[in-house]
Length: 236
Image 1 (cartoon, rainbow, N blue to C red):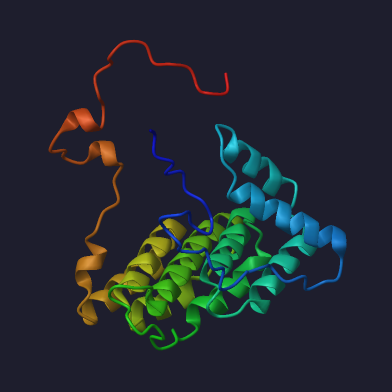
Image 2 (cartoon, rainbow, N blue to C red):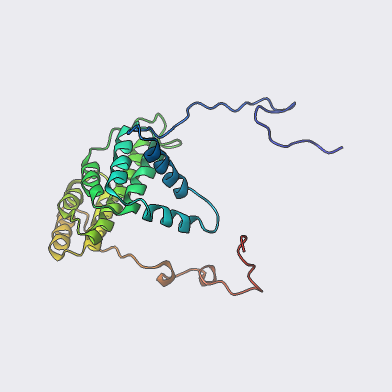
């Protein structure tokens, strides 16, 4: 007789564990404007969408939303979130970055300059480290500042501060590469000097190269030989 082992919320005759939802996180409506709020939720849904056309759909969505009013809503919503809503905070920071609106520049500069709160997790080694989450948010914001150089938003001064004094190496490294992307020779040379004086000169020697240009232990993993016909995408 077959065993009915299909998973069920609430368990079955053999397993009585029940699903307990401890918290439900929602993005706050900071404007009271139903249309603006619905637009924000639509953009965030497109960011996390799936399927073969997911990126295309997301790019089309953010292309339609790059006005001043919308970026203002994104940043005000970000400020309204609780500190421990890390996924939601990251999504809004990434959305602000992807919009590539210069109005986000001042916010991102202020954000990366903020001190990282002390560790709040009781077990950061085996569980979630709040410090790690905050570092991830700031390195993401630094990437956004790197992209805004293309729109004539120069954040070199803030990035040099981080290169000089950041407590976490990941932030110094991210700021160095952001300055490289910015292309200001004087800022790059100043950053190189600060890194060397602070004992982080090795960061300036790092190089970013495409993965296929790096030496590979097994090149077939990068360019595998063809084995028969490749099936078409699932939606074609």
